Image 1: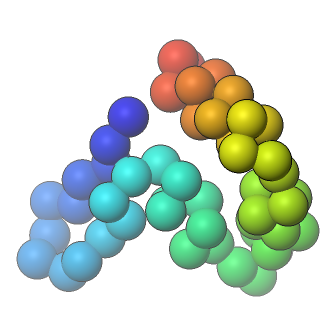
Image 2: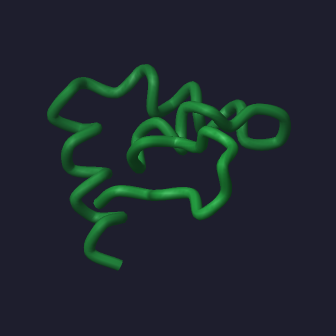
Length: 51
C-alpha cells in the first residue's frame, strides 16, 4: 500500500516510511516497529494494508 501526498511537499513514499516518520507521542510505537524482525514488520504492514 503506497501513501501519496497530493501536495508538492515531499511526503512518505510508503506505509512503513509514514510509520517511521512519527515522533512525539508516537515515538514508543515507532520504536516497536523499528525493533521488529523483518517478518513481524511485513505482517504488520500486510495487516494495516488490509484495513
